[in-house]
Amino acid sequence: MAKFTDITNHWAQAVIEQLADQKIFSGYLNGQFKPDAPMNRAEFAAVLSRAFPHHPKTGQTGVQFRDVPPSYWAYGVIRRAYASGFLRGFPNQRFQPTDRLSRLQALLALSNGLNYEPQNLVEMTLNETFEDADRIPEYARLAIAAAAEHELVVNYPDANQLRPDAIATRAEIAAMIAQALQTGNSVSPVPDQYIAKVNIAPPVQLTGELRGLWLTQLSPHSHFFPNNTETAIDYLSQFNFNTLYPSLWNQGQTLYPSPLLQQLTGVTQPSDNPLTELLKASGRNRISIISWWQGGLKLPANSPLLENRRHWIATRQDGVQFGTGESSYVWLNPFHPEVQAFILNLVGEMVSQYEIEGIQLDSSFCPPVELGYDAVTKQLYQQDHSGKQPPSNPQDPAWVKWRRDRLTDFLKQISIRIKAQKPYCILSFVADLQRTDTLQDPQLWATDRVIEELIVYSDSKPSLDHPAIALAKHKIPVSLGLSTQNTSLVKIKQEAQEVRDRNLAGICFFSYTTLMTLLAQKQAEQEFSALFPELVERAQIIPSPSL
Image (cartoon, rainbow, N blue to C red):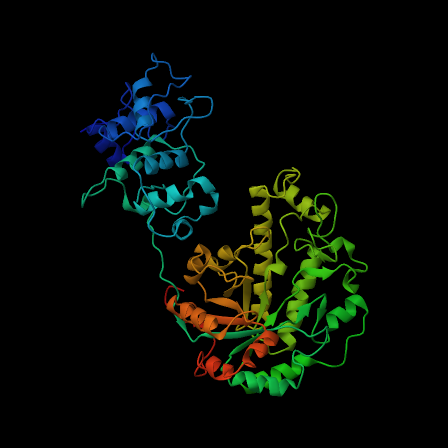
């Protein structure tokens, strides 16, 4: 057995000794192995050629790297590693043989060279396995997920920390090679506690089903129904709806008379309160009310709330204070401390004064990525980036991520405020997964349980195969939002069945007005009643020891 003078009690001692006996690794003339020293690309190519001498070629042959002449000591092994698909070159036909190898590069080489393919959802594998999964670049995520599934990833001292940018040590590369060489039931020399294990929890188990309906205001401060509220709710209860999402915040106004808005704007609030009537009629019919913030952060440019608060408005890089095509609206800046205080106070007012069971946000709470160049946001960015200005490209991935992370932190504050007022109230979110031009991140918010309910909706039916849905289902109830405009009961029944076949949490319809038009058709009431033949509670997670 190979003996080295500097690996006694090292975490990778058994790995190093085994691979040295197999002539895959060698030490230095002074008897040392130098387990914590880095390895360059040429040295790695030599190890790969000895570890996988019979690995088939991929067709990548005939290249002549400008910085690897035939006289270079690693010329042959570099050509073999390239031809076998383990290593690739850089632009201008360069290999950069003396560059030190990062952990990410080593894992990419092994995963790609061994043709590993992930079997599970990539994002789920990465997020459930690595605490720093967000540091894995997009181009490498598939390969790293595949490597994790094959237990190729060795992380010392913490198996859950990938540290993709860290320089790989000789011991770490030896451990990864040892894992790649494992066959059958052979025992790995790598200490088990340092091998990253993929442990994907099953989807949450639910009881009940969401049968929801969005209610839009006929006009500001008006009732939701053209006729009597009590009569309308009694009619809806015949179809066993269990949740209504009334628009309580829209156009910079609340449906109810708000003391907070009275204080901030000086505008006299109406004495009529449609919300109290809605809560009374819904409570009698066992229907939950969740406040839908239809307006979100979008306000009319002439809103009284902004009369003396133009500094609350988010701006584009050119200084314009609205998003493309939205000249009559502006966006509140969710990163401004005064805006955050206003939103949190308004949430607290709603939750504390009325028997609602949650707050629902949607894409109108997620500004377009082109916004974010106001003085406050730039100052916050500079504080986090050693004084550097935000990138001039609003689509810059790191710049978008920083703003999404900031928005995520704000949503966490909203959730905390809700729970402080009423622990049973939830934070719900409606996501349009087809949009990529905003700061919404429903996948992260669901997997981190920042939100407790996700409804997927778009003007055209969203794909239920979207990976965000599969990921969110493992953590929270996920439902489908359906439009009742320009559709048929036959189509609605088909979509309802698909929701149940896929074990989603339920359906929410948009909206009351178009639903009433649909139900006015001949025999429509009878057919629609068949969707929900009996009353059940809204979807809830069945508690388990893992939650």
